[in-house]
Image (cartoon, rainbow, N blue to C red; front, side, top):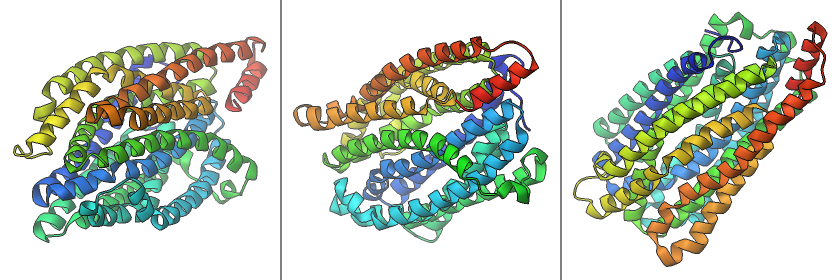
Length: 464
């Protein structure tokens, strides 16, 4: 159901969008967990290392897609908040042209440069074949990933988080079933797990598209909406690209960390893969708060309600930080036991390394929670360049650890790459958020009251 978030209690509205986003994201992480569980328990530890070694490379592409479509969603949510529905539909139609081209270009480039990228990441020869097979199939399915993220982004921009999350749950069930069928029943290797993931992504995207056209008249596009507009394409591109580059830069820095991990051997690779999976699952609530808050902020920005933006931000930040204290403590204390979900008890060296990773990362979880909330708000306010620069600081921090600290301090230094990256990005984004709110208040203060002023404010804000 479409949800207007410009009136009502901020926490209730954000939580209403948070829960379906959280449920869908958690199920996605859980079926990723099943992927790793099936690979680790039914294939081999080398296969687990192979899939893990491609994780950041996969996240690099998925992060670009998510960031780009999220940027388009911010613009759409502003139009909806400003009640410019006809213009919103034209943006969606032109967005289809844009994401279609992006999907094709990314697929071709990813497949052509795949093996050199794996070599650049120092993927060991022992796992190279499995790593190449797995990620080749995943990258061939990039159009399915783009389809789901774009349609889901449109629905969330209008306050509907239930539909994309519901169909993600369906896709998760399909993925888990196909994992077991392809690997356990038919004896396939990592290619079976990859095929299951691509098919599940395609199903979730098609179901979201079907629901959008069937149940939401406000999103039904007509022939006139598909009139190609270079201006709209340019605006969408300018909104989506910085956010895509921000997530890509962040993932690129993770890829550099992964390359350093690969150079430390398969046991370190398995440990970081395991610790990273635990981190990803526990960070789902933080991500979900960020997604929900971005939609809330975008709609209220379009409606010129900056005081509501500040109130919602403060309340959600408080809730997020409270969660990170509890979740981080659990990760730090129970890291070794949690790692046994992925690793066999006999893998004692990898378990010890994974526990060390969990201790360091769990102890600094509030930095990650703050980053998700602050960055989402900054993006929704239209300061996408600052978000991209924040990603650049994360890259610089991880490079410093990899190229300066890993050689003398080894694996332990690598564990601190994530916290240092989060801290670096937070410093810039907090300063940007404070300045952004002040600037928006000053811009609106010069406009007089009345209906005409309301229209002028809406135009000014939606063009921010």
